[in-house]
Length: 190
Figure: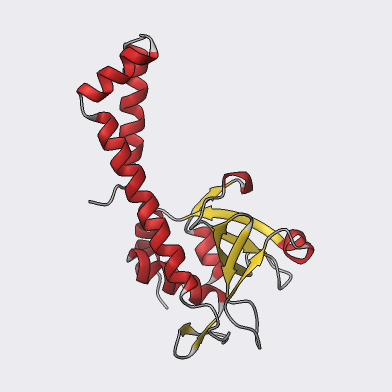
């Protein structure tokens, strides 16, 4: 079972309710949560999230060296930045993101840069317009992306002055976001 955003939310509110309804010392609270099986559920969710993030990053790393190609969305033909991100999320998580970087930004949850976790999306203004470039955060201030014509998929440091000046925002992909984006895309005539 893959925990959804709403499951996390319900679990969090349950824990919050328990904490407010039962103001006891920490060891008693832990015992109560353990008796109800909630600690095990929380640990299982945490491991599930870590495993899925690890799969996402390892899938992305498997494409290092694939050439950039404008409009590309496969290892055989090459990738552009949004095609790369879309392919990785589809292969690793079964989630279909919108095709363009700005659409991916609009379809995902805004997060603060300080809250970045591996698997989050990072956006840059590289073409004098917001959200014109996207990559996947891999941790330790680095991201993986399909950079530009003549280059290949690679990992770069967000701390480099080029990327610092162009950083445009961070987003987290959730199943709820992807479902909403798919519904909107399906209803818009092409």
